[in-house]
Structure formats: C-alpha cells, structure tokens
Image 1 (tube, rainbow, N blue to C red):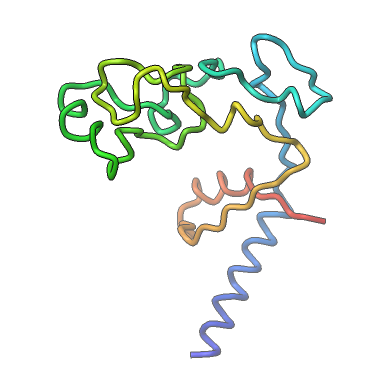
Image 2 (image 1 turned 90 degrees about the vertical axis):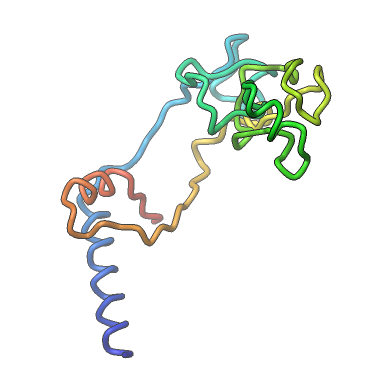
Length: 154
C-alpha cells in the first residue's frame, strides 16, 4: 500500500513539475477599475461603489448578493432566513446598490447590498491557491488548460 501511494505521489509530482516548466508565467491586468476612476498604483482605490459591476459581469447570478425575482422564489425561498433570505450568489458583485422591493425577501427592501468588490478588487502581489483533486490526467485538452493556469512560487 505504501509503495502504491509513493508511486502515485511521485507521478503527481512529476506531472505538476512538467506542467510548471512548460507553462508561461501568469499575468493579468486590472480590468475592473471603477467607472468613477481609480489609481492603478494605489490599492485603496481598487474597489467598486455600491451597484457598479464590472463591464463583463453579465448579471451572473453566481456572484450576486440579491434574491432572484420570480413568483416561485418570492413565495418559497426569499422569505426564509434558513434559505439566506433568497440571496443566491457569493455576494462578490451585484448591479443593485440596495435590496429591491417586491422580492418577498426577509431582508428589508432598501437595505444596502454589501459585496466583496466594494472592499477590494484584489492585488497583483497576492496569489490564491486552489487545490483540486479533479485532474483529468487522460484528457489532453484538460491538461493543456491546466498547464496555462499553474504558478510556481520561487
């Protein structure tokens, strides 16, 4: 059993090192500077005012901080505190500055919507690691995509 685990760990390490060697360094710009302006050299300005969303947000419900507005949600989900009052996303960014009326949510209409992007849009010197065991080793397309997303600390 120990030999199998060591062999598996060795194979994983070899594949990760191979991906890191051939992958270019990751870099990104700050596409989410607020419409009101901001200083690319001052992290204190890297945040969005309430209700402002990035240009490529596309009203993605997974990032939203307000309830869905539908007859079914308004009656079955939104009034329940154990259903987070209908809040359906991760509260990263939302196009509403305040909770809309008519949702049936247990959060009062007009309450301010608090989102992560109101605090900060991130910093280029901070790296976030995601450890995921769902690697498709036999899928060349998935391995190529993974190769472009690997970053190795030095």
